[in-house]
Amino acid sequence: MQPQVHVGRRKTAVARVKIVEGSGKFVINKRTLEDYFPVELHRRELLIPFEVTNTSGRFDVHVRVEGGGPAGQAGAVKLGIARSLVRYDEDFRSALRGARLLTRDPRMVERKKYGQKKARKRFQFSKR
Image (cartoon, rainbow, N blue to C red; front, side):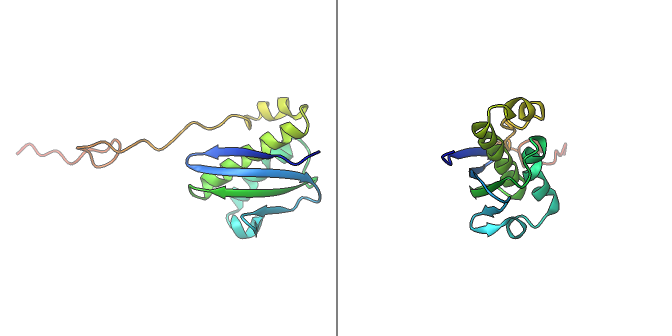
């Protein structure tokens, strides 16, 4: 299989993911998985596509991710991995779709409006 780059997005984070058959090694922005994502919750989120498809430890993952924060980046990498797995084997599509791993999360930060403190919060009202 020729390794192809697949894009995953979440909030403002963009991840370019490439998987190749190997021993389960992760390289994220030239750093190890534990070094880049010190929070266990984010590391576990990345591994969900492999657990759903029973391919844990079968692929080496190379990721270039930018923008957003750790949670958004983890979600972007998860989507990129899921898309890469589908490209590798089309039979994975139904399992990944059932686990809702192929759907891009459309939620974005709502913009701040003028005359307000934040997107929805108003300035304090004073009657007098």
